[in-house]
Amino acid sequence: YENLTPREQEVLVQVVSGKLNKQIAFDLGNSERTIKAHRASIMEKLGVQSVAELARLAQALGIEPIR
Image (cartoon, rainbow, N blue to C red; front, side, top):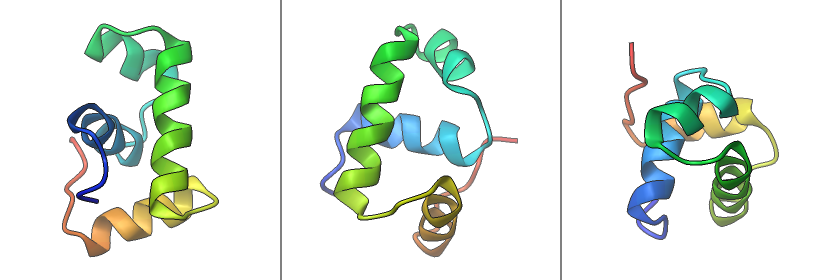
């Protein structure tokens, strides 16, 4: 988790909160394409293949989804 950039950490929280790329892009003031790139980087850096794996890992790390 420490290898993620601050922006990737923000995107991670939004992803595990169940938000769509379009919603994340709007919330963070980025393009949807940029969010897709961040998500791909997050998945690679954390070594997960699916959003479900990502959510389990985030939960194990104590990352709380946005309600």
